[in-house]
Length: 235
Length: 105
Image (cartoon, rainbow over all chains, first blue to last red; front, side, top):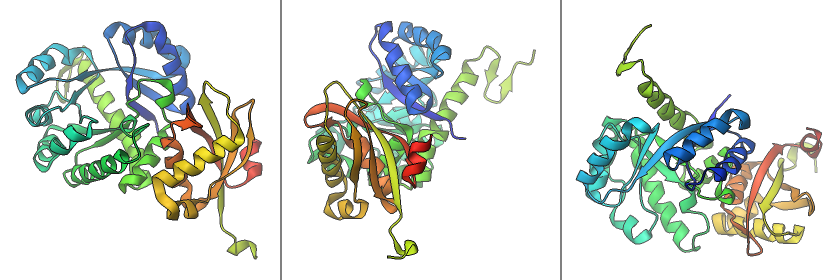
């Protein structure tokens, strides 16, 4: 049976806010969600996770202005979060993020004007493929937008997914939601990719296998027994 | 028409999440409009979504669509963010090939 993972749920910094997100995720059929928030909220969510029945992973969204800022942020946060995501606001940041092994996920801005100039291209796909960095689609980018903008975004995303598949870059589909009503069930998230020409079974992998692999690998790395990739301290 | 020639259908149990009260007519409009926005007139004719019943208190109902258009139906429902200008989400709880199967569990 598939285990579904929502790799991107944004929550505020206040802990009481967390519970509704966890219960909604559980009702929708997710077995794990990644909360993009401050450490204190994630810790509170982890305490509730067993009670609610949803596994919680921590995620940090980096929005650096240049490559140097990205490098210093990565040094600071990598060991504290299961998932490190980078919002690629410029070409330089996108290139650096795609080739850096410490980055798990890259995603692009939602503004159409920025997105036209700065999109996931062939070079970034090749770099991301080598670094095992995943390309993320946030469904919230499409929700509640003007009807004329949605087709353009879908067209850009379709090209980017095609490029990612050609270079064996894992694609991850997340809700990217900051509110409860924007959360969608895993099959609903996968079904949206029908608009981008992705088969349903492949789309389901993008909500289950691809994101859970990221969480699993990073949890192993964060374990105290981890020495180096492939080497683990035996007790 | 012979049963084997009849179009295969799928029934979806849905729940409308949101703050404001909604009627079946409003949900039906939102579903039709959402399908039209996502897949156009041709898509709407292929999917043929129909709201069979809707309980306004429970905020739950049943949608029927063609089985070939099930994924498109799910996709269109996921993209809906409002029902009659009230922020809402239409969530699919269960899918079945028969109404009896949908109501059984």
